[in-house]
Image (cartoon, rainbow, N blue to C red):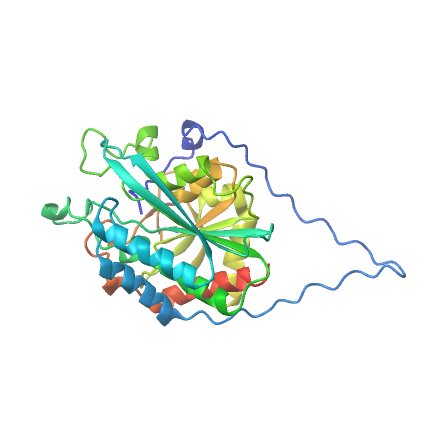
Length: 351
């Protein structure tokens, strides 16, 4: 995931985001029952199928086995082909969005969004997404000789994909009642490196911000169906770390506080409070920001470590693996994959 930065409270206006977010109204009070007009019974919550963390881990390991999935590389092509074929084998209708997108340095990247739809005929839909490309730079590695070497991206990329692929495998066995679109965004992590002195990570620089998340920016302009209006969306990023902390990210809370409450509340009911923390942290530039700019309501489940700041919301940092060559299979914990996957399964099967 990109060199996500702590964005000041005043940044939202500077980012030129034109979408007007409509605040969620509180639920109306239930009507009083009258004779002959009894209230409908509350929908009983169902227990979702068991999420198999071993299978999710295997999907993560398979991606890493291909090597860094950097656009324009053979590993990228081979992994993408495998993902497409695997999702088709799970019964999904798969659309590939291929486009040549320009990186911050002028490099033309052969990008490939992979869209896997379950029950595409169902107008009621949920969006689940993650990025599948990996960082071409290890620009946070303590060893400067590795800054220009691509990383494995076991957590930053492969973990979110692994969770969603396991969910897709479960959908083949027992289909949820709602339609689901699983989108693997490409060219998310090719943003301006931190060692680039001319175009450094200035968080007030719109060019820096938009150098990330190229695949989701393309999707917003070119949705696979029109109109595309899922109930809500959930983005997964870095969801496999052994000591992961999922805090409530500011931009998510601004556009979809109800979805934040649904996810964190479901995780608590399932006993996963040790991963999902009830703390709000500053905004993260990630695919959900670009999707929300396009009028969708998408939250981000992302590993953030709270850090105090002088004013406003708590800041954050990422784990020590972030954009380094420590981001390999050794840091992936099946228990974290389970916590995220089972929480999402419970939500999807109760829509």
